[in-house]
Length: 586
Image (cartoon, rainbow, N blue to C red):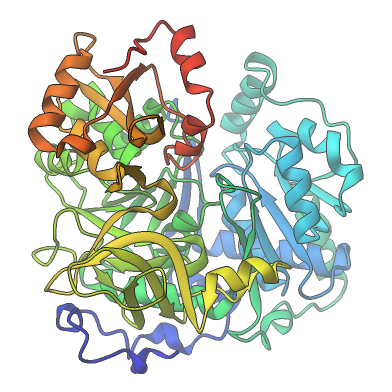
C-alpha cells in the first residue's frame, strides 16, 4: 500500500501537519544510499558520541563513520568473501562500532541481524542458527558466551570490538584497562577472531591494491530487498525474526521525519540514545531518522543504573530523548536530575510500553518539555502511531496513525468495532514487515489479508486518536469482567510513595482470576492498606487488587518493559520472601 491510498475520510487525517507525500526520503532505493548521502551532507558534523558513566567519551563525525562503514563493507565482501544477502550479526551495547558495523552491512549488500548482547548462550545459539548467521561483530565483554556455543552455529567469522572503540588514545587505554583488569568485565579471547581495527586495516590494504567500487554492491538494491532480521523480544515464547526490507525502514523514517521535521533544526539537534540500538525503537528513530537531519547521537552504553546517564545529560546540550516509561520514571527519581533538569530539552519521545499519566505529568512539570507518546512494534519497523508534537497531543493516547498508515480496531472475528469500543489493533502500511524469517506458520497468524494483527487492545475516540487498553494476552478476567493491567498500574502509580507497579492475573477459586499487584516503594512507609484504599477510590471493585506484593524491583527487558510473564511464572513469591517483602493478601 502506498501513501496516497490512505483514506482521506479517516477522522485522524485532519491532524497531519508534515508533508509526507513530498518527502525526499521516498526517492531512496535502499538504506546504504541514504546513509552515504547523509554523510556527504553533514560530513564535518559529529554524528556519534559514546559517553561512559565517568564522563569519558569518544566521537565520530559523519564523514569518519561513513569511511569506516565503507572499509567494513570491503572487509565483508573482499576479505571474507561474503555473498550478497549473507546474514551478519551485530551484538553489542551502544558504542561507536554499532552504527559503523550496521551501515557497513548495508553497504556490503548483506543482511543485518541485531542481537541483544545480554542474551544467554542458549538464546545466542538459537538466534544465530535461526538466522543462519555467517559473520558476527561482538563486543569483547561477551566473547566467553560465544566461545561456549560457536561450534554449534553457522558463524564462520568473528570480529571483536570494545565499548571504548575509537576513543582518544590515552582515554581508550585507560578504559580498556579498567574494564579488563579492574572490573574484570573482559574475558580472555579463546576463539579465532579479528579485532575491528585489524579488520578495517585489512580492508584498506585491499582498497590500496586494487580499485574497489563500494557503491556497486548496493547500487542495485531495491526497497523490496531484505535489510534487517529484527528478532522479537522472545518474552512470550521463542524469539522470531521479523523480515524488514529496505522499503519498510525507509518508509518509517519518512513517516517519522514528516511528523517531527517542523521541530528539528538540521545539523543542530542532539539526541540522547539510552535505549539500546539493537532494539528497533532506537535503531530506526535515533540511529536512522535523526541521521537524516544531521543530529548528534549521544550514546549511553547502558542506562542501568540510571546514574549512567548523568554525565551525558550534564555535558551535552540534549534536545531530544527517546525512552520508555521506566526510563523516564527512573530519571525523575534521581535527585541530580530533579534539581538540575536539562534546560535544552525540546521533546521526549515515549514508546515501547504504556506511558503512565503520573510520569508524564511529573516530566512536563520538572523538565518543562512534553513527552510525545507513540506506538509501534518490531513488525512495523516500528512506528505505527504518534501524538502530534505540541498542542495536538492528547494525554493517555498513542495518537494518530503515522502518515501512510491505516489502523482498524476489530473484534475476535476481524470485524471493525464501533468507535469508542475496545478491540484489537490491526495495521496496514508500507512499514509492515514481510513476515517472520522461516516461520510461515507464525506469519499466517499475524499477517491476514494484508493486515498486521498486533495483539494489542485499544479504542479510537471521536477525533481519531487511539488509546491503548492493554495486551490481549495480559487481560485479567474477574467474574466475567475484563480487567486491563495498564489501568490498574496507572492508578497505583499515582501514589507519591510508589516507584513503579506491575499487575497480573492469578487463579482464584471464587472469581476465576483475581488481580495481583507487585509494587516497588519510593517511600518505605507505604502500606498495603494505603494502596488498596487508593485503588478503591479510583477503580470498580472487581479491578481492585486482591493481592498486593511489595518487591525491591521488577523484572524487565533490557529496554525497560516489565516482564509480566516472569511475574506470572511463579518465581515472584520466592523472590519477595527472600528480600523480606510483604506478600500478604490484601
